[in-house]
Image (tube, rainbow, N blue to C red; front, side, top):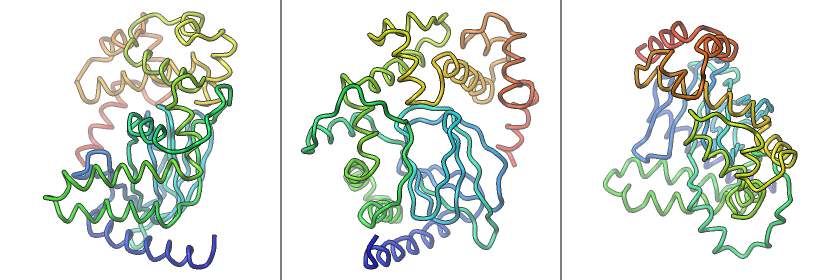
Length: 305
């Protein structure tokens, strides 16, 4: 990066830090008035926080972060951005942070239809349909991209402008993501006909049909692939085999049903396709470290604290 770009990036980042510290004065995750934009603040080196993430772009404004997506490790720090192009189980730790210098981040959930629309408008070379793609990219941000983030944060101070300006700025954000080192991943997973897009469509089907018994050969037929090709591309994109992915998807959805919709463990298990509640309890504890009732009780206490 040239000196002028580095100086410009540092200046934009300092402005972002000040704005975030004004908006978020205590640790937590903060939904903003722009629906797809979330602020995050941590004041200690957090223990691993597990979630099942949708496609996103996460910008570290202060500090550093260690994330795991599908079992793969990604480290990124101030003035870097992580882009995940597909729904994946994830966990993360905010690295050393204090009250005086908290970890600060802004992340955006990505709009697949907007990525597809912009990709068609941009003069890019056509993609090979057989390129295997890892589902996460980490790279340095550039001044144009980070400035778009700053302008999105600034528009929060003008609530009356959000309905008009936020969609334009979010479109610009997606455009700069496509122009940068994240573009290959985002085009690959959102372009009809690519193997990775077929995996994305298979994941969408799984989300809508969790309660149904699933066989890999049936998934392969739906994706118009052989079972071996499905397994290879699924693992390349998500870091997990199809069966591992399905287990994660079911357990996270069951957790959501219990936490947010007050489902009992037995009914949540059945709702996501488990025939045996005993097996569900065993696999839930293996993934989250506690039996369902204890885990949900602790999470509710954390939400109230």
